Amino acid sequence: MNAQVELDRLIENCKSEGSTPSLLLHACCAPCASYPLEYLVEHFDITLFYYNPNITEQAEYQKRLNELLRLAHEFGVNVIDGGYTENLFFSATKGLEQEPERGSRCSVCFELRLKETAKQASNKFDYFATTLTLSPLKNATLLNEIGQRVAKECNATYLPTDFKKKGGYLRSIELSKKYDLYRQNYCGCVFSKRKD
Image 1 (cartoon, rainbow, N blue to C red):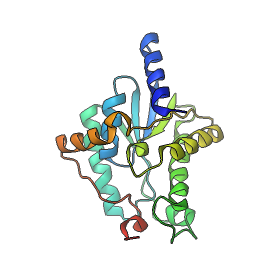
Image 2: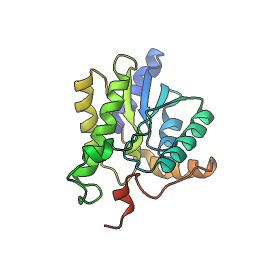
Image 3: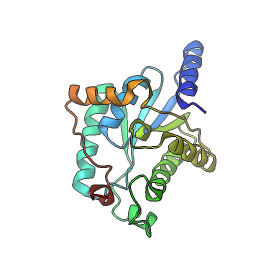
Image 4: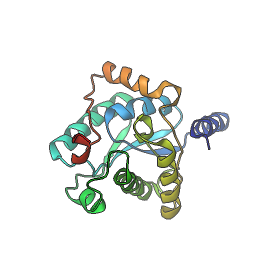
């Protein structure tokens, strides 16, 4: 499946029908949300869902949330804060502490975030998706597979994406400069801060 082709097809269908489906868009941070918002805001009624139990330092969590709220205001969309959780990520990834970045610990983390997004989207939004596919360091195919699986479990509809396509990642860098967004240099968990 080519997520970009599928997304473009859905957008064209919505245009021809004159519909604006609702989308719960999981956002890991403002820079990663910037391009998806710019790209999708005229085609979907978007609500951002900031749910990131992997961000293990509360000050970092709040800093990223504040930046996302500021960006959301620029685009005229709402944000739901999933709340800071101190130990959920560590419980979910117990035994995977020594895994390298982009290994099985990250897959568990993706599932944790996407499953909660699917639960929030169920019976309230037409679709849910994640901004995580924007990063060149994240496997969009894996994220889309997880999204499809948890959608079935939660009675929700996942919108496959690969936001790094069409120059999305580079555009996010430009938008981060335009809006003077804080760009962190690690995913959020303490393990991603260490040198592997």
